[in-house]
Length: 199
Image 1 (cartoon, one colour):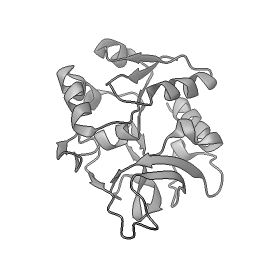
Image 2 (cartoon, one colour):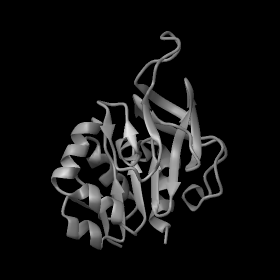
Image 3 (tube, helix red, strand yellow):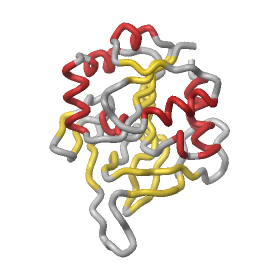
């Protein structure tokens, strides 16, 4: 199985590669359109800033490529946000796979809620979806983010922090996780395993 991990100058890519390696997958980190197109599955991870990431994708014509892919595709953290329509982070037009807006967390109570949102939170309202197969009851995942995707018809799991937001999105061959599966213990491992099993 050929797995392409899209390189776009974002942080945290190495830990995703290690997580895939632990599952027996030797993934290739690349921004080569041909390698990405030929992959059986594509992972789009990252931590970073939305407008800088979008600029990198556009310069290498990866924005159009990503929208045309037919194989299973997984966005992670910033990858989820870039698959949405628009981000409030530097007023950035994103890829528009999910017609969803990405907004900045505004803490209602700075004593109780800190931004960025860092730590373990529960995935709730899980849909019947192959990506979520055989997850434990009340699964917890690890988050590090200041921006969130609103709830939508494409939300297949949500999380509450300050308010409800999309924890996981799915549309056609595109899946996206706001949390870091590579830092989420057995739950994160199961999510990656389920993604690798998608047809």
